[in-house]
Length: 201
Ligand code: PCA
Image 1 (tube, protein in one colour):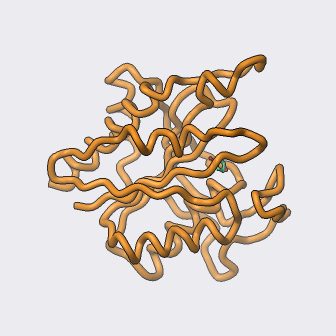
Image 2: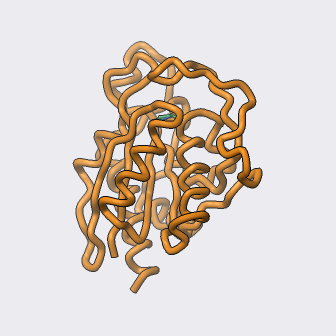
């Protein structure tokens, strides 16, 4: 089993993104090989990079990770919607309003990873985690929806999902915002990966 785990570059005037930092802390589980990649926070480029990695890595599973500043726990996303409506411009200056991600795509796709088991595994290990019913309408939702659409059309054997993670404490200096330590974020993601391994043997 090969698992592609993706994070994102820093964005929104931040110099770090926990979803990128956490990639270095993940460890392979027996029977599951982990390959990591960092995606640009750019509308179509993010999916282009994703497809390049799919062709290079040939994963069985894809777990994407993104920062959700303001959330207070790991959010295992249930659904990606066919909508790009960006609160702020992406890193290339794109700011679509109410646009579709795939003209010919359905309104939404459910994540195809075992989201409840992943959430429960992190919670049981003492890492706050919930199922989230919206990944927003920015680049993270673009990647979740777009990857599910791409896999539905071209790589139907690949299962995909997305976890949003809170800010790191270092990003919250002077802000009244919730955060989670990198070690806790990594522990929670590792629990989710362990579920994927158990599911796939
Ligand atoms: N979070 C953004 C995009 C990149 C990231 O880490 C989002 O939630 O859409």
